[in-house]
Length: 570
Image (cartoon, rainbow, N blue to C red):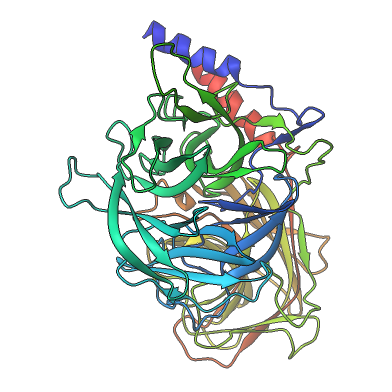
């Protein structure tokens, strides 16, 4: 017990002070709020990164950067609702980890759509990462998830993914497999090869990528699941088809050795990239957990340096070289030197949309695809109109919802709403939503006592009224506020004189850790309208929407978690 306590105290003491990043350094995560499974590709001095999106649409955001720190959303690899089957996808299904690669002027994004356990692997292409992207080309006979492409220097192209081996050595064993890929037909050809199941009987081997360096092939994969035991491991081979030799220093990265409430946990699912000057970096996912348990923002994208070290043993030949992630600390750090000197890290989160354009901004997502648009930016210029569809928040439902990722633990979001509810059940306003199984709604509706603003909890298919407040006729301004696991909702007629509808709501039920089933996404904040099971021709209009961080500094979350650890160690 004394040894364990000393270990915890030492880990806490080794954590850097969590004020703003020192000059010349930047803070993790580099993409905050539901940005899992990053894959990256460099073309010249430009970097392109994608994330998985599961049941959200448009799917697979494509980001651009020139410094690996500040990322701008360019497009989505999936933007045609008719081209991908996401219309009734379950929460946690849909688009899993994707890989982006560039070859001979063409960008390739390859991924898996999990439709009720039917794993559909496909590829889309573009000559410009800003789009347009091609229709998906399904790859026949490709089992498993997390496909990746490798373009070898002999002109051959190879596909890697994971699968269940014919004979499992342990219940959760998965095997990484490889097969040649024909770019003309976009299909697999030739013999299939089983490569590796990871180090140390690692469970759930997934997320494979192959790299070539100094004549050797390196197979990078994730294992251990995407929670506390997540880890990165690597194997080496002279031939791409194997056999692959385990790196004796595996895993090359994990935070499994830290306490459950370490500020950054579950690190893994990485992709490597080389800079023009030859330096290597890893982009990977990690969790920022509230109180060491609740990953309400979902998995996010973190940055870590990678070096290469050759075995020092005098008696061994050949001496092999392996990648080392964060060689000075062995962990994903809060602060690190900026990869490009002089980089000024932008503070993410602040967002405003006045709905003056003819199309929705790229930041907006909906849940699932819809047969017809439920939103309109033309009928009332300068306003967003949402139709009150019959479906409400519920498993597999397609409801009128548009939201942006919650990128901060502390935030404030506001909107101006023009809506006169008529029939019973008609309601419109805002929502903070994790998925179909957990959401808070803040809407305006009409009941026997008049027009009211109401806060409801939607949990596991059950809806509970939490609070209501009479409101006058005319336009209203709604405000949602979040403070880690606590939420509040206010209403105003002018955006200045606020009346609380409900404060200090316990949002723990929004945590993936307590929601039954697979929960791979993060919180969204957005706009919502429903007729609650009835057909309705009604609509709600929104004049603008704003979102801003209310945190006291970019690294306030780290200070909070560090204080918690110090308190628990006493």
